[in-house]
Length: 249
Image (cartoon, rainbow, N blue to C red; front, side, top):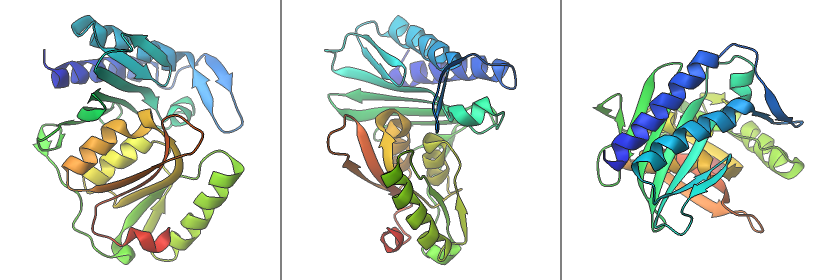
């Protein structure tokens, strides 16, 4: 199978697994004030790992739930086995599986699968972004006053303060504001024209890798700034590339 077909198979198998367990009693591995880790996070990544390394045993896996494979490989799969774990835990059907592939540091494949809606976004570098097999593009909106924005507020005091201040400024300008709980789906929604921008001051690579390639291929714009003293943690501004998002930053 190709890289893309393998990623789609892994995402859809993991999504079916998660859908079977949605709404049921769940085993919690770790609870924090602003986050939660489920046994299903690990089990979903294990399933994805088996599919990916089963097809490409010499590749590397870099996921939210750990690493696997040959970490010296030029090919690195970036996996978020449940993006939106808190939503999933509370029975809110807004979560997804996100899988991206980097070759020598460059993103070349991205897949995001929403099991609840059975929406499958896919992209290969240099090819159109697709949703359920049909080409997509970002919205044509150019004014903040007609836009819908997704703002993440982070989990520590500094990022929370920044996020809330941005949310306030944006609320005075945008048509609607949303806090949705899944960065990957937020970026897929911008790529599809459902939303117009997403801003967050602290987000991990596995949350945004597939969405970055998807959104850029759909005509959007992304600015990432690495957080000093961290590994693969970024601040992000993603948009349709048309609205003046800098006015609310």
